[in-house]
Image 1 (cartoon, rainbow, N blue to C red):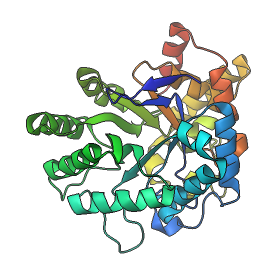
Image 2: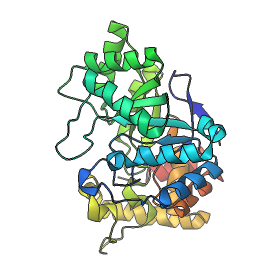
Image 3: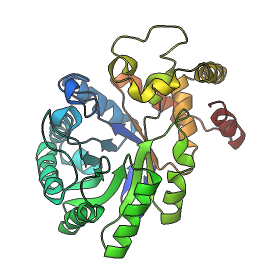
Length: 324
């Protein structure tokens, strides 16, 4: 699988990144810790990703209350040095590790959380480390100084920003330059056919400063797979029955019209909707890599499809224009 450098970090990631946010939970939500993907399925997913050529795994300290990092660490240890050295791990911090625990990006907390992440992962160094969200209670100078210390110490290779707006990202870059601190080398945000806002806001900042961009939520929580149908009940256990708030905006006739048109496009090409949605993302020049979060090994099949063909510029523009 093709790899690309993230910004000017000197570190390359696979075009498809395995998102491990549902290992032992549903993202960073404490209410779902212990649920999500069970322990026995996680290694099967990682095996399938490795066999597909995916060499970058994305996690966070709070995913599953630490279960995600722990299970990745166990898998790496079982595979041995050759595989461990070939896998690029990226993890994040900000969210609490449980109900009532602290959160944020203070200097002390960043250092503490990286130490515990390394212990769970069984690593001495993590190549890619991220702020999982902006911290309104901590000066950006303090956060960047903490990250700078970790990079200088060699325990982190490069740092990035997840869930940052264009304004927040630009401010962080300005402060890093003025203070001579390690800067964010990439943004990791939600981006898909149904969520193209960053193209007008964050992409220009990345282009101006030479940053990379990782797209998570490429299938919009299942909306781009055909899982949700007009006038039909949502499947039990789906995002719309667990954490629907981020996706309520899609519950419109215009969205269902677009999805039905997109389904016809996929059928005409003999691929799944998910495969076509990923192929479209691979054709977005500003996107360095795509974070996919399968809940079973079989759900990596759309990745195989997406890697098997390439959309023309005309096809790409047509598909992008289907969505409101």
